[in-house]
Every structure is written in C-alpha cells, then in structure tokens.
Image (cartoon, rainbow, N blue to C red; front, side):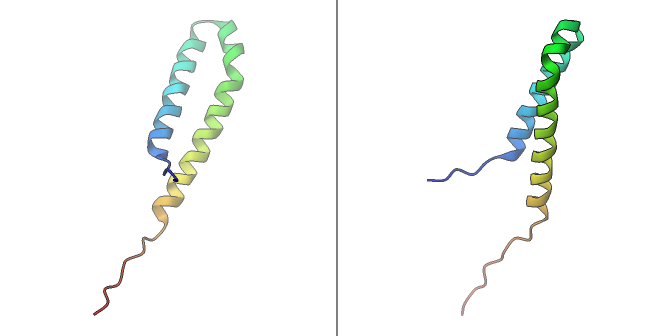
Length: 68
C-alpha cells in the first residue's frame, strides 16, 4: 500500500524546525555553531519541497470523459 506524501504538512514541519533552531541559535554563540549545518540542510529541504509543490500545482488534472 502506498501512502501519498502531504508536502504542505511536511513543509510546515520543516519551517517550524527552522524557526526553533534559529531561535535557539540566537540565544548562544555555541548553539549557532552547532545548529548551522542543520539549518543549511533544512533550508535546502524547504526549497526542494517548495519546488515539488509548485510542480504538482502546475500539473493539469485529467478529467474523466463520460462514455454514452
């Protein structure tokens, strides 16, 4: 059984993780050093998922033709 991926929800979760790590990094220089690589990868994931959402929204939907 295949499950459809909800990219909107996935993108919301990535944005929440980015916000949390950025807030945590603002409070301490050491945390900034620890979180910088994670933030880099989260931003790249966010860009990738945004592109996927744009591609999916631009795809024309197939309409079923009625047969008489």
